[in-house]
Structure formats: C-alpha cells, structure tokens
Length: 508
Image (cartoon, rainbow, N blue to C red; front, side, top):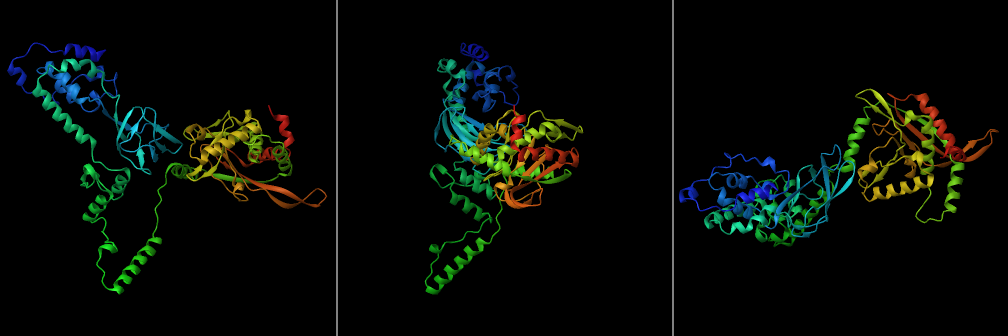
C-alpha cells in the first residue's frame, strides 16, 4: 500500500522550468531517505536490494522526483531481477557448512522449490532449495568448499523478482524525458555488468582459490571472456606460484637417447608424486568428532569391564528370525541390548543424565534416547533412538534399521543426531573384544560391546562347558557417577540380557 501511494503522488505534473530540470541532483550521500517505513514489506525487492541510488536520487530529490521516479524503477528493476541465494542458518550453533554437491549448473533453468545443492554441517546433511523460478547466473563455490552462514552460494536471474512498483507505474514512464531515461539506462547497464562478475566454472574458481589468486584479476580466453583452467595455470606461473612444465610434445627431441632420458625423467616424476604427503581437510562429522573428543578428553573418565553370557539371547534371536515373515526386518542382538539397557536405566536414572558444568548440576533425563555409534564413509556419527522405554523390541529394530540406512546414505537430519542421553558403541560388529570409549558429552555414560565368542567356562560343578560370551565396557563421568553405582547398574543390565524372559515382567 505504501508503494502505491508513492507511485500515485509521483505522477507527472505540469512541465517544470528548464532550469529546474537541468539542476544537478543531490548526491546519494546527502540524501537520507526514510526507507524503514516500507522496507520490511518487500525484503527481496530489487528496489531495496541492489542499491539505494534510486531512492536517494529519484524518490526523495526535491528537484527531480516528479520526473525520475518511474524511470529509475523501470530501469533498475528489469523483468528478470538478479537474486543472491545465501547459506541460511541450518541449525542452532551452526556457523558454517561444507558444500557436498551441486544439483544445477550455470545457465540452467530452475523451478521454484527445486533442489540447488546439498550441504553438510557438524550435525546433519541438508538440501538447499530455490525460492525462485529463473536461470542460474553464477555459482560461487565448488564441492568441498566450506561456506559460512550468510555467504552467497549462487546468483539467480529470477522471473518473479520484479517489484510491484514496476507494473503499476509503467504507464507513467512513457511521458518522461528521454535524455534522463538514456543516462539512467546506461548507469543501470554498467551496474548490471559489474554485478555479474567473471565467468568461470566452480572447479576453475576452486583451482584459483587453491593458488590464492583473485579470479577477477585473470584475463579469460574462453567464450565471452570466460576464465579457463589454462588461464589460471598460466597466471599462476607468471606470478611465480607454479612453474610451467613443458610437455614432451613441445620439446624438440632429435636424438633417440634424449627421448629415453626424457621418458625416464617423466617416470621419476611420477614415482616422486607417489611418495608425496597428502593433506586431508576434516569436514562435517569428522570435524564434529574432533571438537567433541577434544572436550571429552578433559573429563575424568573411569571404565568398568564386565562379561555377559549370551547363550539364551542367541537362542531367542534365532527363534525370532526363524518365525520372521517380514523380509524388511532382520533381527540382531543390538535391539535386545538397547531394550534391556533402558529397563536397567529405569532403576538407575543417574546413568541417563547430563552434567551442567556451568551451574554444577546434574539433569536427570526423562526420555531414554539411546545413541548408537555408526561408522560411515563420512566419519563417525551417533544418531539416537528416541524414547526407548516406550518402544517394543520390534519397533527398536525397525528404527535402528532406518537410522543405519540414513547414515550410510548421509541423509541424517539434526533431529536424528541431537538429544541423546546415553550411547552404545557396538565394536563387536567389526571384530573387537573390548574397548575404552570416551564420553559423548554432555552424557555421563557410554558403553562399548565387544563381539560374541565361544569360550570355555566352568559351571557350579566345575564342569567345563562352551559359553557364548561378550565383554561390555562402561565409561562414566567420575564427576557425577561413582564405581559402585556403575557396578550395580551393570549387574541389573547383565541379568536382563542373560535371562531375556525377565524382560516380559517389566515390559509395558
């Protein structure tokens, strides 16, 4: 409504004296237009996005506002406005994300809500979608780059970025002075050329970034001045950053012996490259692990080791699997460990708590959100199963399968990863017998389960018999939990695992 009022008041008035028309416009610095009154109505309007020259020199100029308002609006706001798409806040405490891959290319047409790219934070993998329908003008980051929140990912020529002021005031623009229109058009065209920047692909920009070069300083030899990979390498060589090595085809080798020597030198260079050090930047979950384990190493740990007989559990799991009619469900030992763990936590809630170091207080968690450590190609991740105390073993099995599939495809969201209250690390699935895990702060307990193995054991009559045994190691925060509490908790958990029929007495 505010824009309509402005446009109505700006309709052409009777011609002004020539001196008034030719008087110089005030500089943008001297004009301070009160934009706050309506800027919130159209936050992405090109009128307020590109620059404030229109508002300061045209809308509020005491001399030329009657003749320049609609001209500037029509020139500065074309049918396809350029929109910068920034990296938005993906979660609480997230300051940057790694760009995993692009779903679009420069010059490609995109629809509204079409996926543009995929990024990964310390907590989850997120797809960025387009808010506009238009054409991709420029991609500013390459896969593998770390993008800070608020930085521009790409630029889109959006079809729907036109300001409402344009269509309503277009009829009035035809009666304006042609000389003013021509000068304004030239100025807008220059701004648009400067806005587009240098043409190049993300891989070329990434290469220039590796050499520490500003791609705007490189003269492109491609179509329309596009900067190519060869342009970056040549520019780097001219700056002494990289020495250009002539290929064998460029060297005039006459003697057969010189040719052999050149080939041998080339092979030596290949052998030398094989022994070079490789630097691997840590991204996503790996970077998160660096932070969490560094913090955990400062906490006073102690570990409690126990042995659990799994003979009855093996028989029960085999019976479930034999009677399983759902091909999508595969019964494993871990859901039994998780459910029995939750029942033991009901008697010893201190193990299902977190420690607030700032206020020196312990928070007993109401939900049993059991985290399961998973090794993925992208690093260690610990999604958690929510409210285990209210789930059946079958429901835990299905949720665990879902989390494992999401983790392997790098599709976990922040809700899957956050909110854990205690963690299990099933190292036995890989082959370890026991371990000494570090806490997943702010949790106060973590459990490592080794592999189940057949070992000789003695019964009450001192008769040797084969037993299926696993070792469990409980790591605890000694600031909150003492050894006696962990021992009693482990005895309760061990009893439920060795006699799974007791689970029926406590299930709800």
